Length: 409
Ligand SMILES: Cc1cc2nc3c(=O)[nH]c(=O)nc-3n(C[C@H](O)[C@H](O)[C@H](O)COP(=O)(O)OP(=O)(O)OC[C@H]3O[C@@H](n4cnc5c(N)ncnc54)[C@H](O)[C@@H]3O)c2cc1C
Image 1 (cartoon, helix red, strand yellow):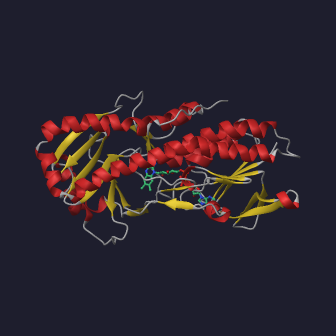
Image 2 (tube, rainbow, N blue to C red):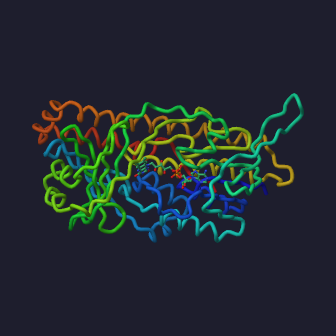
């Protein structure tokens, strides 16, 4: 059977590798990092992402990974709560924070139980292997494998670039990423959570004094996260962060931040890149997840869409790979499948990025215009109910997904 090489063991690569391996397709999964602990990885899974994991048969695996449902979403303007919307907001399950490092580890371990799965960690993929195939008039350049940083080469009938937003595979394949203008970076902090927060884990978004930030209790026991939006060109100067936050957080957290002091971690600066490749594939190669369409962190979409990409890819690839002869694979059918995957997934990605931009735009309006903030906050007892109703309705596509994604086999 043809061999597939998947570059990157984030949510896209790890789940697709597992699904292919479980269906008897030889897969090599290559991950640059030695382990999953080092990098920052988002935690928010929407009902659509949780549903994708269920379809993959991973509910029991998910139970073994630290996770924590959200209780509600709260929006704070100045020192007033505009509204609180309780999870699951009409969905069948609540938005849930899932610790990614153990999830990815568990996915790779599950794949390692399949005899046709190969795992290479701690080595980056450096380049693509190419071959010119076909008769002179109809010849084409085809990706035929990858080269690792340690010099090894892996020959594959299909290479999948699931190597995230800075994808080296995308660059090597010459597939162009069209990016949206950069609007924010994020400084990410962790600190001990206040007692009792876990029991009522609100995702609080605060707009106050020209700042927008969010706080919530993460998947890990006792850890509060604070995501602080900054302009991309804003320097990360050393600040007394505890004092800065204490002046801005909702009243119930002020005391906690006043005494947080040194327990607030040094910030991690995360650059936010949003964009889309107009073409996700070339002969012998497919981009998926952030490599094809890097997502903004707004309303936790990236992992969910990545998991749905993986399902769509499995649906199109498995029938072709299973009927293909390893000695003479049907490359035309394989390349047709790559185009079908992009055609199926692109509308949802376009829509999700639009909705994310819309949400971010509203936050930016409130951040910039104090008078708007003041008006909404003053009349929050009346306006809050209305805004909550509209907001809750608008969340549906971002929570449930915008197209039907069903794992077929
Ligand atoms: C600040 C921030 C917060 C976010 N929070 C959330 C959230 O809560 N929920 C959500 O749904 N989304 C969130 N996102 C988006 C989400 O993180 C991504 O959309 C998602 O991780 C994409 O998954 P992926 O598998 O495509 O790529 P990634 O998760 O980026 O995984 C790519 C993998 O490829 C590996 N790799 C890279 N280069 C190479 C190479 N050359 N060779 C081999 N391996 C390589 C990397 O080490 C990595 O493990 C957030 C994004 C940001 C910026």
